Amino acid sequence: MRTENEARPGLVDQLLQPVDIASVVAFRILFGALMLASVVRFWAYGWIRDIYITPTFHFHWLFFSWVSPLPGLGMYLHFAVLGLASACIMLGLFYRAATITFFVAFTYLELLEKATYLNHYYLISLLGMLMMFMPLHRAASLDARRDPRLRSNTVPAWVLWLLRFQVGVVYFFAGVAKLGPDWLLRGEPLGIWLAAHTDIPLVGPLLAQHWVAMFASYFGAIFDLFVVFFLLRPRTRPYAYALVVVFHTITGLLFPIGVFPWVMSGAALIFFPPDWPRTFLAKVVRIRPQMTNEVVEKNESISPAKARLSSLQRFGFVLLGVHVALQMALPLRRFLYPGNTAWTEEGFRFAWRVMLVEKLGYVDYRVHDKTTGRTVILNPARYLSPLQVKQMAQSPDMILEFAQYIAEDERKHGREVEVRADAFVTLNGRPSKRIINPDTNLAVEKDSLLPRPWILPLDDSSTP
Image (cartoon, rainbow, N blue to C red; front, side, top):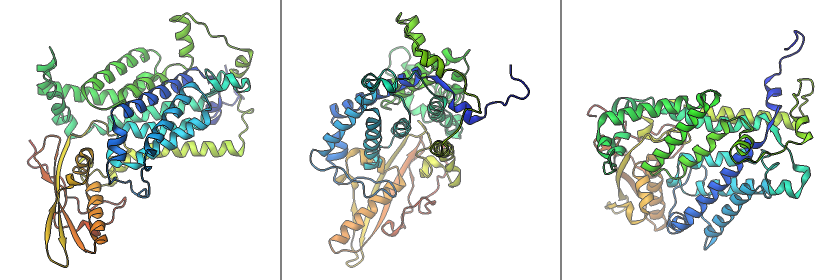
């Protein structure tokens, strides 16, 4: 019991308290293993060639148009380095160099081609960045075996809570994003996706029922909004995690969302007590890890008087606060843009808007030569890969970028042209509607973070 004169530890003191390193080490091992499997998967399916080598044009992120693929066999070498970094993270070998290499290499891939954007790729980049600053190699690692001075069975509590925050923010804002009319009133896009699986034995016919889509939609929204809170409570944690595994297994089997379900199932273990791997090994595998005297000393509470921060530590906590604030702000920036975010895609990315959209688009470009007065119709499928065509046709910013590529290519051949788009998109089962103002000369429009006036608003008056 605290005395009246004893100060209650502040937030910084609590974040500096030592906690068992076991759970974050397990996180490191699972993360490295999944990333290594992903690299092998990319290689086996030929995606390195199809996404990064074969296309002659790549869609760029704003401010990163200078990023380009490595020539020749460079992209294969790049993936080999990425796989090696993943393996080193898993093994805890040259951990600092491995995490830096992984973050830079993986983020580089994301910057190469906007058409490949997925929420879990963004999450992987964030986790890779955070791990660069976390001492997750101080136990169950080859680094600790090589240099016993590194060994420790504890880490500061901020390491554990920052990982919990980063995983938790995905679930929570994915739930917030589902609080819209399409998801809650129409049961879309789940209705479309579930109806495509009616061939599944026994339950297949049920998946075409509207009430099933509505039930699944409400369940998904409630799950995302509240699962983190139940994972944090000791009494409900085992049941919540069992639900996490079942939920992600079903979504992983039904929908083509890559390694996302497995990443989230593994990452959710971070909400268990920090010593859960030791408990698991002792009770299930019958291995009882020994705690050293050093650990006992480190596990003693640190009083506020003992917590003296250096300038570097203070700067680190400032950066931590900036990161947390940014992760909270990015999903909310969509409210700064007019219209339906799923339609315009303004504020849509980097906001954990997971499984909210079923969009199909079609676009042709009208290229008008100012000198001759001649207008030709250009089909982008002649120049882009199938993946690029599919993603570009539903994304206004990518439609703009390819229009400007056309204009620049014509300019290199001595022709000044105007480029307009006939672009039509269907969103979550709505009739196909025009998304780009057909009178706008996209060749002279500038992309920015501001709202794009040439995107036509979604007219829901005829929505069934």
